[in-house]
Length: 448
Ligand SMILES: *Cc1c(COP(=O)(O)O)cnc(C)c1O
Image (cartoon, rainbow, N blue to C red; front, side):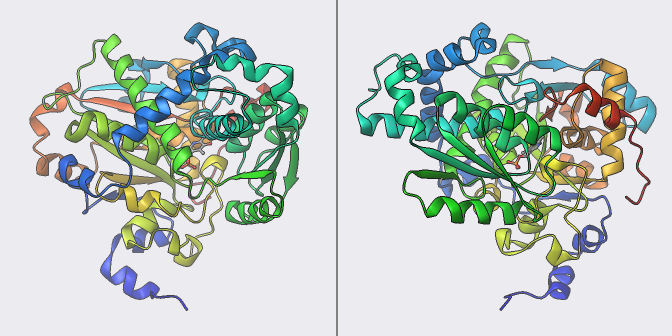
């Protein structure tokens, strides 16, 4: 029995009228509170983020050995942060959006190994599991050089172990490629939204790809079932994993250093706004959580979801989190943004982020292709459609009454000339050239 009724939910939260009709919406979170207050009730802390950062450092010699492209960063998987003034100007001219302050792009689209934001959480979770197994097996001590994991004895052991994951594509790529490099047998359970080239690429790494006609939640359920039957199999549970979340959160520590290196200040007089494409919630949730730990009340985090799959928005607006799906709201859950094609949010991210998240934007699929062309023309940078959701924030910022009210409420109006906005580009560098070309030629109707 459902413990809620759709009409009552809409009555209580009128924004759901727009959302349920697939209209673009801006939601400002009424439960957002000061960092000090929010941190009191949180189940995770800064110490958890630092622990994840230390673990990634321990693995750096191993990653550097297996993936030469990470050597210039000493085996750390990290992306560039760059100013995109031409895109900012283009947005002003084309959409009439005057974004006060400076627009930057965080290029997780170009992260090594997986070419998407999933290179953070997905890879971190595989490494954490690997460390646990290797410790228990006596293959490794914390003080060792982790490059020993690339040697024959370790590889022989990991060949007997299985990793499984459910994915809309990018998570499968990050877990699949990293797990295969360690030596694991890998099975990726792909939802119907997954793009063919992602499946092909994984198979070329020796990964077993199982395809389902169901959506993401269905693929996860199948995968979890298969994995639970086998004691040597580990299932990466994107819907509930604290490990994934913390792997993402480490991005905040790295970003802080990059901002300092660029001479960009974040403080009371220089607010930071961040726009993160959201699927199941782990990536944008983890990163926002990390950013809040570091920048506290000086950072304002917004998620962006497709109008037909705003699962985190629906979950947080209603407070029902994973107890409600976008289909329950009368939406299809179908979107060209394959990385965001999730109908039901993570079971814990919405609850954890409730006091930390500033709000959310939803975006039509049509706009994703427009923003993709805009960025290509203005900056010569290619992103996949899902990642382009990050521009909905900068485009809608100034025209949104709700955002203006938010600025007023938090006494930010006077500081906006000093503001820094980060559009978080979440994927794209591995997209094959012919697929890029097809994307560039995709023009959707307003209602698609
Ligand atoms: C997975 C993904 C996201 C969102 O991450 P979630 O953890 O699912 O919320 C955003 N963009 C791209 C390209 C992705 O692959």
